[in-house]
Each structure stands twice: as structure tokens, then as C-alpha cells.
Image (tube, rainbow, N blue to C red; front, side, top):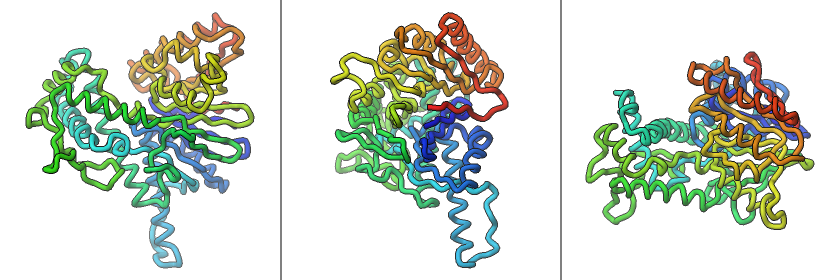
Amino acid sequence: MKLEVFHAADGDCMLLTSADGHHVLVDGGRAGTFAENTSPRLQQLGRAGEVIDLVLVSHIDADHITGILRLLKDVGDWVVFDHQRSDGANPDFPEPKAPRPPDIGALWHNSWRAQVDDLEGPISALAVQVTEAMALDPGLVAAAPESSQRALTELSGLAESIADGVALSRLVEERTPLERNKGFPNHLVRLRERPHRLKAGSTTLTVLGPTEEHVAALRDEWREWFAKKGIRLATNRDGAPPTTGGRAGDGAGSGTGLALGGRSPGSLEEAAQIIEKAGSSHVTTPNRASITVLAEESGRSVLLTGDAAEEEIVDGLSAVGKLGGSRGDAPFHCTVLKVQHHGASHNLSRGFAERVIADHYVFSADGAHDNPEPSVIATITETRPSGAGPYTFWFTSSEQRSPSESRRSSMAAALTEARDAAARHDELTVRVLPDDEASFVIEV
């Protein structure tokens, strides 16, 4: 097995390949980095007649999904081309400009609508209102209470993410032959009492999350947040929550059903006050229900975490017998850990680092949102038990490759922490993707 990790700006994009040559594409990063760094590799696979067994979209955040949107648009364009040219029906129909992508066997992606159910409309409405207000006067965010600023920014990003998720669902349904989440009840990829496993050649993929409890918690936190801030969810005449329009499961909605004392928040200042009153920690983004997967082959393993919360990862590992049970308090030692949420400190505690140990830690980040945070790097190095063996930190961006001064500064701080740790610990090696290279490959 091997894991190819692409430079994806602030996002994730990885290609997992089994020992016998089967491929799983995990997330797509940003559309621009996907076109520059990932597409040429996929075109190489296509020219060789190889297939992507599975495309896995961990969640709908733009830094994970927009590259996949680009891929599926190309797939759809070639489907239309093949149909038009079939049997000589339209021999002059133009060939798509993008090279033909490889065939895709399956797609895993949980739509936002499937995760939050009737809350999709109200959440979308609030996110869009905040986004529009920020566009009209970006300085309003800086004027908001500090505890609300992050929540406002996340709500703005959520509007983009929901729209991207809708676009992906429609691309799949209207322009490709792919069936989303085939084999999963209710077409929702999640951990069940009998864990779902998929063979990709000689590699076995086991779904660790989200669980039904995690999806329910996502909904409950949003309901609690709406209730605390005084926004009532309007109902239809029969008392049921309003429908959001669009086809079931595609995440499309009209944004109806949101009211604050009979009206919507009138300004960003008002939205900030609402967030401040309710507590910004209750603004729950799609990260909370990321699809997480454990890939295993010949005693080696790759833990693919998306942006999942650490407790969700631990719950999944425990449910499939990798933590707890007969193992007692023994940690889970994997070959590769894709560090969750780009190395954000609120998603990796000392407790997690002590329970999940790896030979290779992958940090997919470029300094955006201060990720990877130096404290996460320090946590991993300080908690690693003696005798755990040599290990490597892999970074997808250098200080120079990051696109802005603030991101370059954040990456410099993270890499300085990592290199200082390597100077103190002989077992640690630090690898940074060169600026002129698209990816690195970890032999698992």
C-alpha cells in the first residue's frame, strides 16, 4: 500500500493505492491545486487504463470538495460527449477541453441535507445572511466581539460549503452514471453496529464514522443554538418543520423557515450579538460529521480522518476493536495518521496523541487559520512513549509556498517547532514537500 499526498493549499487531497494497484481518491482540495497537482496524476492513471475504485469526499468544506467538483464536471462532460458521439449520432460534437479522467467505480459523500435533515434550510439562510453582510462591509467582523468573530467566519464559509455540496449532488445525479453511497441504508455513509467494509483490491477500508450518535449530536447542537439565540424554526400548518425544497437528499433548499421574533437577523452586528449570546462554540460546521476510514493491508494501516473531532475518531476505533476491549488501555499504533483538521489544536489533545500513535503524521495545511498549530506538533512529540519507534512528520507546504504573509508566518512557526523537535529527538524526521513538486509518496 502507498499513500500519495498532494499539495492542496489549505485542504486535503490524497490517493491511496493498494499493493495490487487499486486506487482510492480521498478528497480533492481546492479546484486550483487539484487542476495543477492532482489532475495530471489522474490523467496518467486514465491513459494506463486504470480505474479509481472509490472517490471519498470526507465532508463538504470547500478545501476538501471543490477539487472533486472539478473532477466530476470533467466526468460529466465526457459522458455527454460519448453519448453524442455514440453510433455516429452527432459526429461533429466537440470533444471536452479537459483530458478524459479515469473511470470511477464508486462515490462516498454525505450531503449536508442528509446530515442535518430539516435544519438545512434555516442553517443555510443564516449562513447566507452572514456572508452577504460580510461582503457588504468586511470590517463588521473585526468590530464584532472576539468570541463571535470565528463563528461569523465559519458561518460565511458554511454558505460556500453547502452550495458546493449541492453542486456535487446535482453533478452526480444529472451528469454522471455514479451512484452515491451505494450499499449504505438511507444512502448515508456512517459507522453501524456491523461495520461497513469495502475491498479496494488487496486493501480493506473500514468506515469508522460518523456514527448515528455523531450525526444526531450535529443536529441537536444546531437546534440548541437556534433555541438559545431566540430564533424560532417556522413550521408548516400541520406543525411539521418546513421543507427546504429541492430533491430529497441533495441539500438544495430555499432557505425558508428561519425567523427571529418573526423576522430574520437584520445585520451582521445583530447576527454577532446573537452568536455572542448563545456562545460561539455551538456553531457546528460540517467537520463534526466527517467520514473517517481505516485502510488496512498486510498488517499496515492508514487512518484517514478528514476534519473529524478527536472523540469521533476514538469512538470509531473503539467500535471496531482497535481501542479498548481486550486491548485495555493500549494505544492504537497505525502506520500513517492523516492529522485531523489540518493540525488544529482544538482537534488534537494530549489524550488523543497518547491513544493514537503513528509512524507517519501527515499535515495537509498551508498556514490558513494558523494550521498546523505548533502546539499540536509539540503535543505529539511530548506525549510519544519511549520505544514507539522512529516517526516522520510530513508537511504539504513550505514557508515559501503559502500564498500570503500571514500563512507563511504560520507555516514558519509550525516548521520551526517541528525542526526543533527533530533536533531534540533522534527518532523524528521532518519532511517538507518541495515547492516545485506536486506530491509526496509514503510507502506504507
